[in-house]
Figure 1 (tube, rainbow, N blue to C red):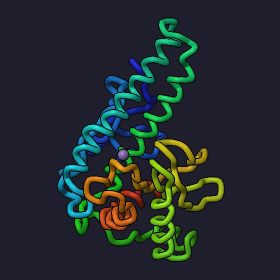
Figure 2: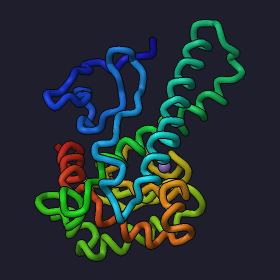
Figure 3: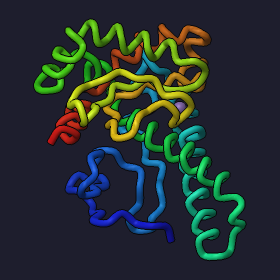
Figure 4: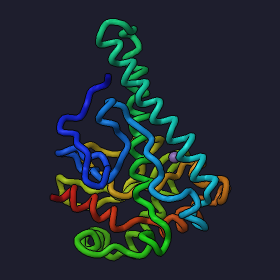
Length: 235
Ligand code: MN3
């Protein structure tokens, strides 16, 4: 069995709760088996139409995200084999790279699905409360944040993500780019809102029009969930 998270327990809403960790509304780990898991989508695959189409959601979640979960569990198993003398120590670098890429892929997507909700039914609009105040303080205005987030995400070279993150040293929000599934985020930053700009996230409906996809994505952002993540990060 793989290493378990200390203090893991099941929350009253049935979601995984890791005490001391912040993403308690983000399922994707089974404390019973110690394995990372592909949680079901929190809504029907067609629920984000017309902004994100059902076929993209099915393939993206059921094949791409599932692949990262498999890769993450495989990397952990291989590294444990090496620790216990059954594997080849010269492959630690390879499996460490696999761990980084697939753990990134799993966690990014777990945050991505729960960071969205159907437009007009939990998704879209604008944040309020402390998150809104922090956005206004750190970006000047919500509209300026939106323009910055969309531009940064559209301009990611190749495959990657755009993120709104909380940086705890300075206590501020930042927008940053991630390349692949893990490269470019700095240590200690807490990811709050991510948009997947790998082609598999949008190509079926939007082809090469990544900016149109990002504009549509803004209509399905689950701001109450992003505000919960911000509250947890700043607690
Ligand atoms: Mn993806």
